[in-house]
Length: 344
View 1 (cartoon, rainbow, N blue to C red):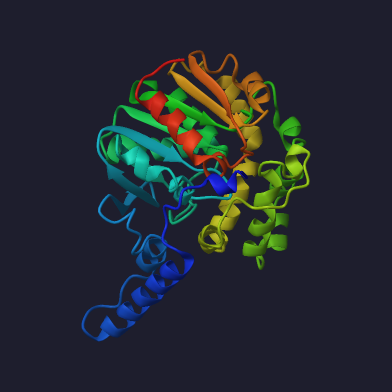
View 2 (cartoon, helix red, strand yellow):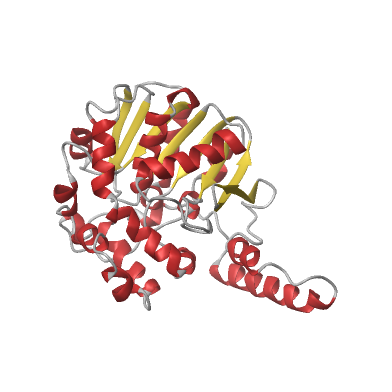
């Protein structure tokens, strides 16, 4: 069975979702005479979850102003708080596959990082320490959550690491998913040499000029490369673990010029990320490390000494970089085991 075939059918069919989105647009148009014109941003951010039965009744879209950035997040469920942080090129929606089950046990906050997704406005920097401060202001100051279980994937894992490093008293647990940590083991030059896309995205202005008019095509071509048995893992597989609807949603947000540049700034800030890691005291928050199949030793070599209480470290069978999309059942089981306090 392929990794993609293991995915549960949580969403309505493509036709159902397309019709639901069209119905929403029609309702908004025909209702214009009876009420004020709706905020187009509201329509955009809600369209992907409109009429989704797994979303309705459990989750809601929310916004909060944080230091000049209008931050978007999705929240729902009950129990101890779990904060989910996405990487590139994704948004809060990268967690949607597993959020309903997490919400049966926890209060979930899936955040669009500052300047990305449907979070609008420009943060003062895209280094992960700065982004972590924005997320902390949202979670701890605005929402009053002082015992967060913070989980990050890809470059969102570096934000989660910085959250725990800067605010250990407000961090109960740390989930660190599939990212070599920029730092002493991998400095900026070494990190950019890991993959063509890291070096390319780190260039000033060039990726915007190349990608700007073809965002969806670029994302569609990129996702399979770091999937299981994709070219980044020495394979030749070209099957994407993403549905057309998922790619459409990510393309919608990254087609916004500010978000596209913000995504590339995540890579342009790698030298600052290295310096921040080197200056950070070891994180003593209990941590879970998960990686793509066969990549655990490499990631652990970069976090050893920076995470002093790794309670479990595991690679995800049959998964490349897209852990949630490629093996959601395994990721959910491991996260719940960790979040519920089972060690080892």
